[in-house]
Picture 1 (cartoon, rainbow, N blue to C red):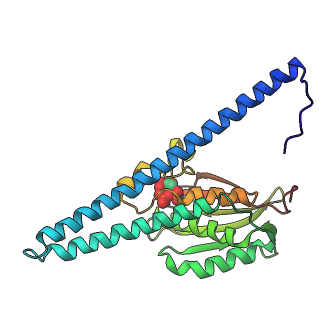
Picture 2: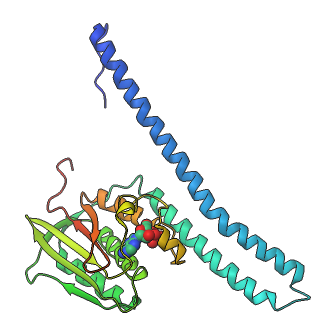
Picture 3: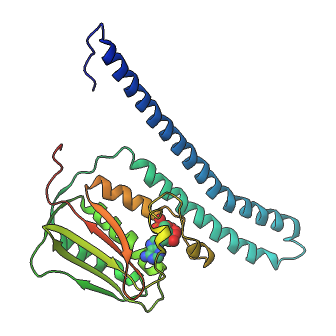
Length: 258
Ligand code: ADP
């Protein structure tokens, strides 16, 4: 909401106004460029599997009858690529829905939220998960679903980018009165020059691509958005002697403007 401006304006005010309009235009332009880039990246990511699927359909049509052995291989390829497209479309929808949401938070005991998320999820992962939770409750102000989604995304990455026997540790501590969750793995690690980019949409470290580890580069951008919506923070660092640590600090009170 902008206050109605007094008219006529003083020349200084006209100058100020001009500067403000320039700022506004600049940020609008940046937004338009970002949106454009996003649509272009998303289309590219969808076009690659789609082209491959159409190639296999055409192969089945041309050769399926005379060479029935091509059919199962092509079908399994189509199955795999269409599943990948489905995951991608679902991630895109989640991201776009999050542009307009206002999540409702509440007070929770973080130890309980973490405990129940891990209990429900750990069977899906090959790696053992070690939980380091304090004995006493740790009160946080958060949207419970968001915290669960954040933890699952980080655990899923910790698992994907680690050998199947490298343990994953989830811990909760209170650092300078900030409830702090760490998800630590003993996996590939993230080179320093890539760390600042991993929360960008579609960004994947070369190593992840070249080792054909499945993924679309959207998981951490969803995490980053959920973290913002919950007035929390997230940071990434190296684990010792190898692997990655994601550190989340949660809010303890509702945001001041709520
Ligand atoms: P993806 O679907 O590729 O996993 P994300 O947005 O979740 O997408 O992560 C972006 C990139 O960050 C990944 O492709 C990977 O290169 C890197 N990354 C994320 N988490 C980890 C981790 N725990 N260990 C090593 N690399 C990671």
